[in-house]
Length: 289
Image 1 (cartoon, rainbow, N blue to C red):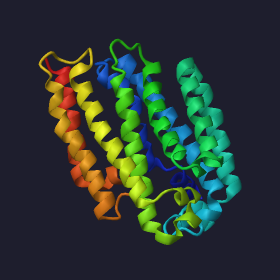
Image 2: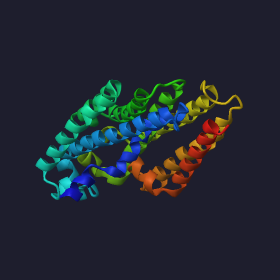
Image 3: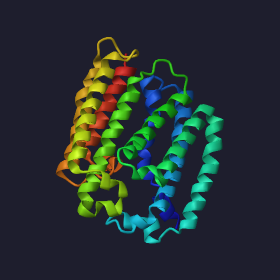
Image 4: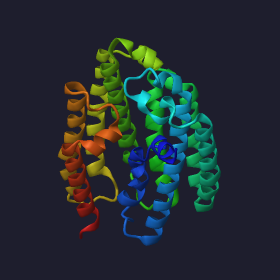
């Protein structure tokens, strides 16, 4: 049962919470130990609250998941994890995480609480509303970035990163919906109600808009942020970022391997290499004099 509970908490999806580190990396404080310690603690608490959301979402979706070709194998729909145990774990995690978040930073606790409320509303109602469902997913990523900002004394963090995060997460969200629609075919609406409000051509238009806007906004960041080198060396990361966007688009259109962005991150080698190279260039630009 403990293993089933851990699976339902989705530790594989904690990779999404690395957005909490955006502030410390892009504000050139990565090697400042107090700031790093606070950000790492915030990352851990965000992981706990994310698991609360996953537990509640799986409880809410248990009947629909039992009809899904893949999700029916999850612990709750398969019966491996009792619903009352999942509820007890969710409440316990909230009781632990929220007071610790307030102790760490009242601002961080407010962001974490907002993330929790928005996602609980998503699990209950908003995930059934086309377009808004993806915007709520994007809001979760923006709140992660904002959480990182509340944990440190920010000096010159560029607002362009909020724009890039919003557009990039919209791109991943619409891409995920497209992959789900392709996988479930004509029965998509019976597995996930919101998919009735989408079509492949419509999602392709959304993806085209936000993918182009993501690349453009990131490019603008690389030469307009106030704390970047005057030689515009951050622009060296643009090809890597563009490749990651194009690679994910290739996966969702040419294969059926891109249902969840976090799973792609953990399994697709070209994207992993591109992310690693992007990270190395960013570190070199910011921290090597």
